[in-house]
Image (cartoon, rainbow, N blue to C red):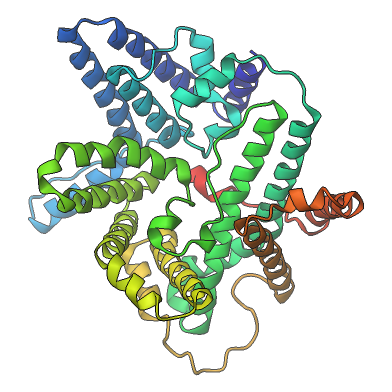
Length: 450
C-alpha cells in the first residue's frame, strides 16, 4: 500500500492526466487478463486479440501517429494531391513504452497459460506504477515481479546498505560524468553543420560514455531505491562496454528490452518460420531490432539504428566460424582488445543515429568525421570547459576500472570487505565526489523521452 500510494503521488505530481490514464489502462488490462483466463476456448482468442490491439494501438496513437501522418503528408505532397494532413497536438503519457510492453507480455503469458492472472487490483497497479521503474524501466516481467509484491519483507541492514551504495554509484555516473558530457553532445548535434573533423571524432567517442553513464546510472539509482524497500529490480546492464561482439553487447545492454523482444518476438518468429531454417533466425533478428529501433522513437534515425544492429548481428552469425579461425592465430588478449574496440566503435556509430535530429544530420556527421582533421584545433569550445573534460574522463576511468574488475570475477565490494577501513573510506569518498563534483542543475535522463 505504501509503495502504491508513493507511486500514485509521484505520477500525480508530474501529471494528474497521465496518472488517470495509466490507472485506467491498468484497470482494463487487469480485467482483460481475468476475462482471458476464464473465457472458453471459443472466446479466449478474441479477448486476447482485443487486448493486443488495444495496447499496441494506444502506443501507436500516442507515440507514432504524427510520424505516420508526416510521412503520409510528404508522400501526398510528392504526388501533388493537394490534400493537407493535420498534425495532432498530443503528448505521449509518461512511461508508456515501458508499461505497454509489460501489459503485452502479461497478456501473452495469461493467454499461453504460463501465468495466472493477478486477482488483486492493488497489487497489479503497484506492478505497473512502481515508481523506481515507471519513468525509464527496467521492463519488469509480471511473472517474476508480481510475486515480489506479495512477499512479506523485514528490514535487512545489509540490503539497505547495498541499496545506498548502488544509489550513490548511480549518482556518480549521472551527475559527475553524464551531465558533464551532455552539454557537448547537445551542442554538437544541435549545431552539427558548424563542426567537422576533431570535434566530431571527440564527440563520437565521448557520446558512448555519456549514454552509458546516463542510462546505467539511472538503472543503478532505481535498483538502489528498490533495495531500500527490499525489492530487487532486474538489472539492465552487465558491463556492456566490455562486450566482445554485438550479440554479447545486447545481452549486457538494456537487458530487459532485448530479453523481452527475444521472448515475445524472436522466439515466436523462429517457431512460426521453422521451415525457413537459418533464414528464420535472420528474419527474426531484423524484425526484433527493427522493433527495438522503433521502440526508441518515431523517426527514420531510430529505424536506421535498428537496421544497423540487425545487420551487425546477422553478419556475426554468418561469419562466426571464419572469425574464430582468424582469432586463433593471435594472442587472446589482443583478440579481446580488438573485439572490444570494434564493438565500442560500432556502438558509437549507432549512437550518431540515436542522437541526431534527422537522417541528414546523421549522414553529415558520418561524412564529415574525417574532414579537416589536419587543421589546427584550439581549445575545448564544444560546449563544456576543459575542467569538465578532466573530471568526466577521470570518472570514466573509475567506472571502467570497477567494471573491468567485476568482469574478471573479482567483485569490488567483496574484495573491499576484507579491508573495512579502505572500504568505508571509498564509500565516503564516493559520496563526497558526488556532492563536490556533481552537476546538480542537471539534465533529465536520456531515456525519459521513451
